[in-house]
Every structure is written in C-alpha cells, then in structure tokens.
Amino acid sequence: IKKVNYLDNPFCPQEAKDEAEYQRRVSYDDYAHIWLGEVRQHSDAQVFKNKYRVESFEVTPEHGEPLQGADWGFSVDPTTLVRCYIKGRTLYIRNEAYKVNCEVDDTPALFDKVTGSRQYVIRADNARPELISYMQRAGFKIQPAEKWPGCVEDRVAFMRNFEQIIIHPECTHTAEEFRLYSYKKDKRTGDILPVLEDKNNHTIDAIGYTLTPLIKKPVKNFVV
Image (cartoon, rainbow, N blue to C red; front, side, top):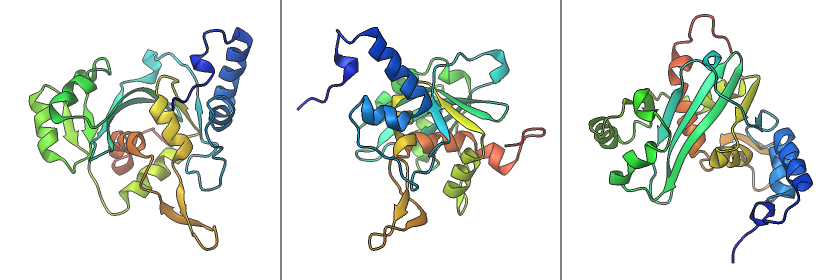
C-alpha cells in the first residue's frame, strides 16, 4: 500500500497547489487533513494548537546566530538535528535532519545535511555522553544540554510563550510533530491531563535543548 496525495500528481493544476499552500499557511492541521489525507487532530489536547504555522521565510542578519539542538534515536526513534532562530518574539525553525535507525557511524553525515552545522554549537540530549564524545571527535561543537526536574514541561512552556512559531515547509517532520504532540487523556472520562505524551516529540525535544540556556539564564533584553 502506498499513500499518495496531490504532491504525487504531476497533473495537479496550479490553482489547487496555490489553494493547498494557502491552507498550509493558515492552518497546518486543516492542510494535513484536507490535502494530505491525515486524520484531523483539532483537539484541546494538542500542546501547540494555534501556536504555530508552516510558512516559507528567508533567514536574514536580523535573525541573529542559529541555535541548534539534537535528539538521539533509540530503537525505532529517530536521531534529529534542528536549527532555529529567534527574532523578536518569534521562533523560526528553518532546518532539520531526521533519520530512523541511524547508526552511530552515520550520524556525522546526517548532521552535515544541515549546512554549516559544524560551525555552531549543538546542544544535545545528555543521555548519550558516549555519542556526544564521538560527535565532538568528528568535528562538531556539540555539548550536553542541562536537565532538571520538570525540564520537559519548562521547555514546552517556554516555547508556548513565543507570540508565534514559524516552521519552514522543508521541516516536514517538525511540522508533523507540532501537529501531533499532545497531552494525555483520561481513558475513562476523556479529560485532558496535565501530563505530556512521550511521543511525536523528537524534533520538539531537539528545539527544547537549543533553548536551555535562555530558560536557565535569560538573555538581557530578551523577553518571551
């Protein structure tokens, strides 16, 4: 079985493509449902509901230096690298590298898919110190991200405090995770619980690691 949509149709008219692009900008969840055939996810359980949009943008000097974060794959989970920027009160997510079942030896090549990733600091999940050491020897400026009790919730709260989060269309896995990342529900009552689901969060965790210094030690004149 192969899932296809309008992107696979070489005869799709430009009018339909323009309509799909407009829908992607204004509501990624509606776009995924109408144009990609995904199950509609509108729910109060969505962590980033109405907090993000998928839209093309060009990085300019006003965006400042990039922030980079990495999350390591375990079993069927992906290894990810995400590059983002902060401009004013907006978080811009521009690049991603994403691979399931990524072997250790293949990780440098995966990270090199984000152009210039070796030139800037990468903050990574500190659960794999041996992998961080390996990537340092491979020439990456990578360091473990600090963790503390409640750090996952703190990172999510910090991200939600941005006025808007803009995800570049090339970051397809990031956009999908922002659409799916949810709080748990009580199976008996359907009530939304104040507990984050530990899934659909690999690029989101990587973004959270990039923001750790701002959460722990806020930059002067930077207010989210």
